[in-house]
Length: 158
Image (cartoon, rainbow, N blue to C red; front, side, top):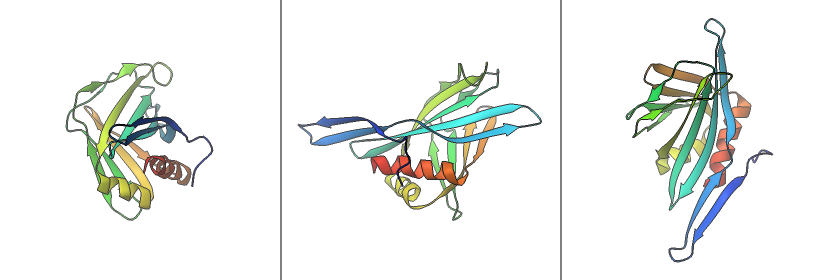
């Protein structure tokens, strides 16, 4: 199911290698608000394929004024409706930057995704995502609309 705003932003073709790279638009796939702490967070996703290798790029925006870091080895856990859990790991130090929701911080991190996990994302509904960082985790429960967007984004680069 292709939703209205999702598009391929960039298509590059290497005529010598007969290879194509694709990059999707960025779409919001999650949000949450903690009433007790007044913490608001939003998660955005784009996907890419270069030389047959898949990437997922997550952009996380918060209203937290405290900087945070995603360290090497920090994971994004992807919970499927059928109970499967997939994970992708970060390989570099990525600090947040000022400029999120209100006066908060944001971060953008790209993760390599195995073909096996990518196929799971195409064939299963995702129920939630957990983004590890130096101070804990940001948790997102995906509603039906966000889960459909995630699957649609992945289908654009399959």
